[in-house]
Length: 332
Length: 232
Image 1 (cartoon, rainbow over the protein chains, first blue to last red):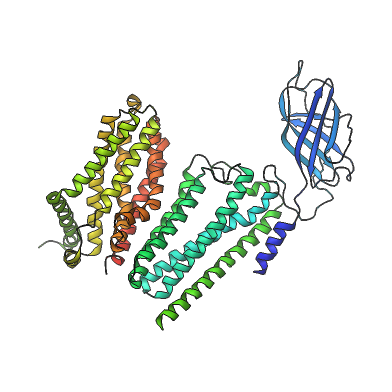
Image 2: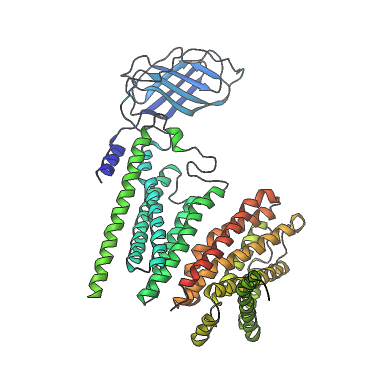
């Protein structure tokens, strides 16, 4: 419990690494190019050796005449030696506090007459290790602060899979041993797993709204999650419709086993078969591992996952003890 | 004197054969189940024809056919335990083991479902011609239909047994079976959509293997778990 609380405190309180939010007010006239950079958690004016350059593939163009007007947004004016070809340019920025920040393809320039590609010039020195080396969460465009949700949304589903696995095992044990305690365990595990499914759907919906633009998308993993929730809701319906307790336990154990196998296929096999998914680490999408270059995210994430699973087991055991008490009360 | 292996196989398969024959004879005598499924197929196909007249998009054609087949499967399978009531049920489990009963039911209803699927395919094509008939690889498409029909009937086999024992009727089959049938339906629609779009076997084989795995899984789960269901 304390591990979970600690991990979640760190997950919510540590600042994001500095990054570039937006490039605006682009003016591209004559040999002058100016734009403003809105930073996030950044320290543009505190750091020394501020450098700004734009980059597109091999093409690198440094600012020869850098004029800084404000801190945020940072106003940049640069002189161009020659007309620039139409392209998406990445804007890079250096200083001794923030290190090197990148806005990938953040700047679009319309082409100009007489534009030619110039060979890369060595005109900057990237600062890889900056002064601020404190604990921080990686900065990603689109995700921004919502990257913290990684420590909530993903472990919810891990916990749900853990609880459904538990219900699968206890249902098998019930059929073998015919002991009513296992039936209570299956029931408790499925109830707790539905709680986690609801939390997983809620956190997922918020995250999807923020990053993909809608609360619900037609994603294979979302279909799997929704349908497996339906399966387990049908489990309760089956229980309600049988009045004899012994028969109810037997039928629902059979359904729980069948449901788990199908649930596993929903969540694991079917999304793997799809051509397209929005979720990370499926089909050809990058994984969160790729963002987490320094492995800082991993430490918090693993602790949070372990904490949530222990928490889910705790909720399961509470519910199980409640069912046991109810049974004792009924027997008397 | 037959050898012991033959005798053993005969002991397992013999009752299954006679149980399948029993299912067939009861349905043949009664014909109520056959006629009701047939009526369902014809009337739904006609309804789709009346509402669409003609379909130009091959994917919509394919999806509509699968939805008709899905509900046909519910119609077929939810009837599978209608006759097993009271004394007849008691007698059935005195003469045969529960595994033999479920195996016979699944095999009979799979065959029934395959026949109904092919029939539905022909009736649907009769009313609404397939939009892109020249480019269609008929062999692959029919293979998908047969595989999907087998999958629908085996996946619903266990749920219909559960619904029978829960005394929930056909509504219960739909509630318990609908979420469970979806992965099979996704795979089947994915497979046949690939085929109607002119893809080769190599592009759709993953769906075919998924259907095969689902058939084997639900058949073996039904075989293993049915002994726990039938007792009252």
